[in-house]
Structure formats: structure tokens, C-alpha cells
Image 1 (cartoon, rainbow, N blue to C red):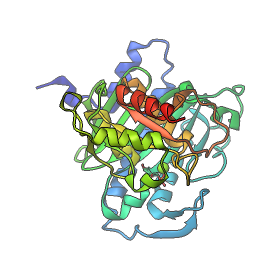
Image 2 (cartoon, rainbow, N blue to C red; image 1 turned 180 degrees about the vertical axis):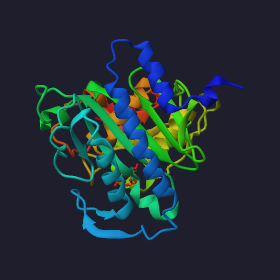
Image 3 (tube, protein in one colour; image 1 turned 90 degrees about the horizontal axis):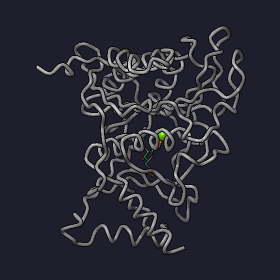
Length: 336
Ligand code: AHM
Ligand code: MG
């Protein structure tokens, strides 16, 4: 029987640490706290249909959207699981406008964490996969004090770790701390994340595209041509591509990461900045996909090099298999 089948996330993290003697172990502890939050959220997501947790809270989040109870639950679990570990100096969540301050004596850690507690929340009521996304940076403000906005507003290439949890037919946690992208499946009987996908590499070429085609009318002409190109027949090129769009970024990108694919949430004439958030969605997913050998851009620039302006800013994104992301960039450039 394979040894890796019994590799828990906790053990894997310790073994990774041994490979990097310079590591202080703080990041490992942080990931450990995160995995606890993921287990609690997973439990709650799985019984969402059984308890009275569905429906709207009646409140709106900072983007003016209705917030469902499970989003707030996930947000609170993450804050509570992470704010006493002593590894962070501040946090930020897609569900909260400003910085999340960490209680005194615990707020001088050397990292900051940004997260989207429950992405794809419009899918909660219909039993479709949703996810949690997280992004970790080293602080840039002086040590020994609470974190500041400068610690948060850093370009994506400065991330030291990023990951997501997908609550699907099983719950999986996928993360990278720069040394490969690794996936762990939650065994519901043991309550442990077990290594199931070591060193994930995204196929260089895709045969799946994921985009909300309902917005076709509003797209850039180059994007319209690119999608038509994917639908033409060309056997050597694997075209026509299959179209797969769940409407949950985490689940769409997770599938593309394993099978090869391109996920797009472009700018369009109604939403010139796209829909997804640079700090909570684009940067962490770009960090993971690049670490798996893929590519992520906003159509012109590498996502990870974009200098953020504010916490909740939106950004168009084209992410996935390297060849395909390059190609869509070319189609967009031709129509400038
Ligand atoms: P959310 O953060 O409000 O859940 O929105 C993000 C989600 C992504 O998971 C998904 O890719 C996208 O919104 C789908 O948007 P649309 O319904 O416009 O296609
Ligand atoms: Mg989201």
C-alpha cells in the first residue's frame, strides 16, 4: 500500500519544513489553523440543507450584494480560527470593508492573510460546489506592531502561500507555499486531510474553456473571436473545446488545474473591471496556477505583477493552461 495514502496535511507540512531548514515553522502553524477552519466550514456546508442555515441574513456586504448566512458563518470561523495563533498581524475578508484587527497580544505576527470565506455563494442553495480562498503575505510594516493597510496592498508575486478549499463531492484543500501545489482530500470519518494530489501540474494545453457566455454581447471583439476559434473543428488542436462553467471560480479552476483548461472572467462593456476581486480571488488563484506551471493575466499584464490600489478592487482574469492564456492575450491584442 502506498505510503502517501496516510500522509496527513499536518505530517506533510512538518516534512516540508524539514526540507527547508530556514523555515521558522510559523507558516506551517498558520496552515494548520486554516485547515481546522476548513474542516468546520466543510461540516457546516455539508449539512446546509439539514439545518436552518440557508437563506439571506438580510444584510448586504461591502459590494452591496446580499449575504447568505453561510458566508457570514465561514467568515467568522476563519477569523476565530486565525486571530489567536500569534502568526498574523492583520486580516482582510471579501465580506468586510476594512482591515480585520487582531486582538492585542496576538497581533504582532509576521504574516497577513486575505480571504474569500465562501466563494460562489449563489450556488449554496442548489448543492453546487463552493470554496474558500486564502492568500498569505509577509508583513512590510515594522515588526512588533499591529498590521497596516500597506501589509495588505502588496502585488501578488509577494505572496508566500495561497490556497483554496473546494467543498464538492468531497472536500479538498489545495495549497502552495512555493514548493509545488499539493492537494489533500478530507476523510470525513477521520476528520483529517489526506494527501491525494502531490505536486499538481496543470497541462500546458487546454481542451476546456470556462466563461459566462451569457455576457457574449458585451465582450471585447478579440474575445468573441477567440471563443469562436475554440468552437471551430481542428482535430490536431483538440478543437472544438468543451465548455464547462460551474459559476464557482474555485470549482472551475480546480477542474481546469487537474484536466487542463482556461477560465475567464473578462472585462466587458458593462463591467470594465470584470467581476472578480484582485486580492481575494485573482491573486491567490494566479499564485497557485503559476506554481502548477500555468499562467494568469488580465489580458495584458501578469496578474501577480499588478500593483493593487485598494483592498476590494476588481480585475479581469484569464487563467489556466499556459498555451491557451497566451493565445487569448494574442487575440485581445490583435483587436486593440
Ligand atoms: P462571489 O464572490 O460573490 O461568490 O462571486 C464570485 C463568483 C465566482 O466564484 C464565479 O466564477 C463568478 O462569481 C460567477 O459569476 P457570474 O454569475 O457572473 O458568471
Ligand atoms: Mg468571491
